[in-house]
Image (tube, rainbow, N blue to C red):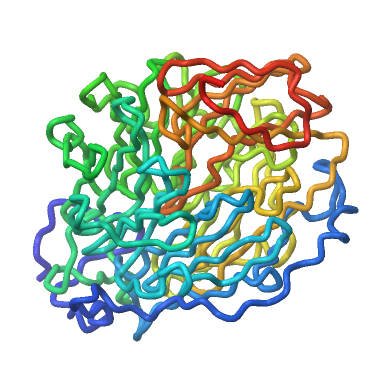
Length: 575
C-alpha cells in the first residue's frame, strides 16, 4: 500500500511509488570536493562565422521569409549538454541550464556564456563569428553542478562580473579587466546554495552598488524520497509538489563584500520552489521590486519599501492565473507590451496552463493571456522567455523556449513529446499576439528540450538575436534576419556615475511619431539566463527619436532630443 502524501502530483498521470533508488538516476551526480559531476557540456572547436550577405534580402515582418535562423554551428558556438546514465531521469536531471549574452571585455561586441558542469565562454567579433576563450579567461578550471547565471558589474569597474548558480554550490566570478575571471565567492561572503536556480543583480537600496538575489528550488538529495514516480506503469520524474521548498537569498553589497540580508529585508517571506526571478520598478517608486516565478505554488512579488520587502503577490494579482489557480512558473520577464508606460509581467508555465501575461493597472495586475491570443502556447512546457522587438516596429514581441520535464513522456502519453518547438509571438499594436512561429527557419523551430534563453544584438546590425539552450544537444544561436529597411532602431548603452555603472534599474522612455515606449535596463529575466544590458528601441518608420528620457536609479534624469536612428548611443549619467 502506498504511503499517504499530503499533496497531489504536479504532473498529469504521475503517482508516487516508494523506494525508487538513487541509483535509478541520481547516482550520476556524485558529490565530491569539486562539486557534482555530470556528463559535461564541453566547448568544441572554433569554426568560421556565417555569411551575412544573403540575410539582407529576407522579407519584412509581414513576409514569408524566416525571421530567425539557427547559425550556432557556422558561427563557432560549439557545445553540447548531455544527461548521463540510464533514463528515466529525475527532477534534478531535467532542470536544465542557462546562457548569457554579455560584453565581458567591453569591446562593443557581445560574447556568449553557456552554463553547464563545465561552463564555456565564446568571444564575439561583432560580425557574427565567435572564438572559444574558455581557457584563456580562466573558466576552464571551474567544475560543479552549475545551472544558471546572472551578469552585472558589481564592483563598478566597467567590466561585467558573473554569478553562476548551482545545485549545492554557486560561484561569483570577478572580471579582471576583461581578461580573466577569478572565483571570489568565499572571500566576498557568498555561501553555497542548496539548489540555486535563476539569479539576478539589482541595486535594491539605490546606493550605487549592485546587490544579488539567488533563488532556490526544492530540497532534494541522494536520500530524498521519492526519486521517481509511477505514471501509466512507467517510472518517471516526480513533480515539485513531492518536495519541500527551498527559499532564495538576498545579498546586499557593502563595497568589498556582501551581507546576507534575507531576513532583515523580509525577503524570506516567500513560497519557495522558485525557478524564475526578475527585478523592476513596476510601481514607479524609483525602487527595484522582485517578481518570482514559483513551481506549482503561488508566485511572489516582493515590493520594495525602502529598506524592506513586502510580499504582495496575492494582493497584486500576480500569484495565480486568471482562474485563481497556481501554475508551474518557470521563465519570467518584465516589459511594457502595450506601451502604456507601465511595466507588465510575463510568466512561462507548464503544459495546458495559460502562459500568463499580467497587465499592470497602476500596481495591480490583470492576467490577459487569453484575450491576447496566447492559446497556441498552451500545449507546451515553457521555460526561457523574453520580451523583444524583433521587427523594430515599436511593440514588444515574445519568444518562448519549450521542452517537457519528463524525458519518457511520449511513452506515457503518445500525444506529448519531451522535445518541443520554440515559439515566436508577434505583437500587433498591444492588443493581440499573432503566432509567428512559422517565421522561424526549420532549424530554429525543430523540437528541442528548451530551457535557458537570452536575447541581444550580437552582430550589431540593429536586429535583436537570441541564444537558446537545448538541454539534450547543442545551443541554438538564432540570428535575426528580418529585413524591413523602413523600420529603424536605436540602442542605448547606459553608464551610471551616481547610480550603478551598468545603469541597471534605469527606465528609458522614447517618444517619436506618436508612439511612446517605456523600456527597462537590466540583464535578468527569462530562465537561468542573462541578456544584453543595452536598451533596444524599435522606431518603426521614424528616422530619429524626438526625445529619449533616462530615469536613473539615483533619481537623476537625462533627456536627449532628436536622436538619430541606426546607432548605439552611449548615455552617461550627469552628462
